[in-house]
Each structure stands twice: as C-alpha cells, then as structure tokens.
Length: 322
Image 1 (cartoon, rainbow, N blue to C red):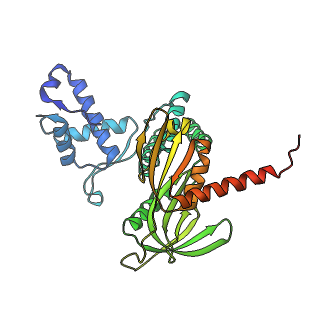
Image 2 (cartoon, rainbow, N blue to C red):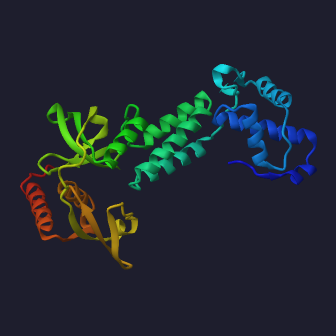
Image 3 (cartoon, rainbow, N blue to C red):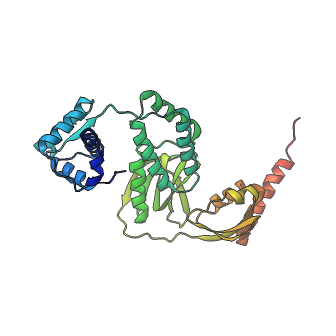
C-alpha cells in the first residue's frame, strides 16, 4: 500500500527522515518492477503531493544507498530501457509459529468456500510471502501447509488453471490426454464448461459428444489440445433440485455459485441448486447424512432412497465381529 503525503506533511520531518522515506519508496517501486529516473520522479510526485523533481544524481545516490544495504540493482542501459532493476535484496520477513498457523488456517477456510479464484489469489500472495522468509521459516511454512491442507499438487498450476479458464469461457472443445485411475491413460474429447475446486483438487467440467456431463481431475490431465470448433455442439442438461438442511449442516452451509437459499428458519434452510452431474450431487447429499433431505425432483429422491436401502441391506447382512 502506498502512503500518500502532502508536501506540508514533510515540514515536521528532518532531512534524514525525508531522505529515508524517499529511499524506502524507491525500494518499494523496484520490488514491483524496473523503473527509470523519470518514472521514479513521477511516482514520488504522486506519493508526495507538491514534491519537487529529483535530479539524476540524487536518485543515483539513493540507489547507491540501497546497494550499500545489500541490494543488487542493475545500472540503467540501452539493454534494459535505461531502467534500474532490483535483482536481489537481503531483507527478510519473520513469522512466528502462531502467525504461520493463522495464515494456514485462513487458507484452509478459503478452500471450503467454493471460490477457486480467491484461492489462487491467496496462493499467489503466500508464494510472494515465501520469497521473503528465511530458509527455516520457509521450510516450516511449507510443511505446515502440507500437513494441514488436502491440496493435490499440480505442475505449473497457475498457468494451467488460467489456460483452462480461458477455454471454459469460450466453451472450447478439447482433446485431453487423461490418466484415469480405473482405465489408465486415454484420450477424451470434451467441451469445456467450468472449473471447480473440491476436497483439495481442481476439476474441469464439460460435455461429451453424447451430451453426458463429465468432470476430470485437473492434476490427472497430461496434455491438452484445442480443436478448432467455433461453438459448442451440445447444451448440457441441467437439473433443478431442492433440498432441506437441518442441524449442524444448516448452520455451516455456504451456497456456491449454482445454489441459493430460498427459505430459512431457526431450525432449517431450503436450498435450490442447478446441477449438471446427478451422481456427484447424490454423493454430496449422502455426505450431509441425516441433516439433509432431498425434496425435488422425484427421480433423484428415488435414486437416493434406493442407494440408502442398498447401504442398509449391505450392513444388515454383514456379520459383526466382537
């Protein structure tokens, strides 16, 4: 965050304080990107309203001060558009165990919100924080994240998710080389629809040629090739379901982008949802346990009842060993 000052605010500062402020401001600029003399002056005048322009010699002195503190800053030249570029610096961030645990708990909570974009942004922020930690704290932070989160690692995650998001927005048809845990490696033609994040994994949702909805775990995608088809040939079937939640599940429920709470009381809530994958919804409803009752449509209600009867019968006919 940039501190905005008025020139009059500096009158109560001594010359050392003003110089220190300018040097810190220049350091903050160079952390963001390379800057030329002109750009440094423009930025300082934005931050300090009414400030005078600094000479190249003065800026050079400030840069040399940063170098004396341990910063490696390249000299302006034709090769870098005559800009100063910060290559490295010795400044580190110190986090104690409680602060590390708090950051991990925040990330853990965000992973439950069904907002993968927010999660990616937080991950990028945490990666930036890691760059400023000393090796011991970095190792501790990374290990705590690994121990507390259920995230499945994805190679080049940010780039891959960004690419898939672009394909989803354009409903592109893709040829995906996918490693299935059941059938091994195979090629799947899918029209990309949306991305989701659940239980530590990213999923790509889309349609097969038979109008069947499918979702693929992104970490199992080995290769992606876009097919030059302008528009999607099929419209995914969408089911409108209503279900009731009570008890703990009602208290903790947070709707995702395809859900809305249509009724609410002290004891229960009624949720309306648009679903594309019936199997996945049934699994989720069963996971809620006795706190969930599916109200409509009738065909999904019957499937859940059948599934519950099957589970009951399998337990009923199983010998219990004391």
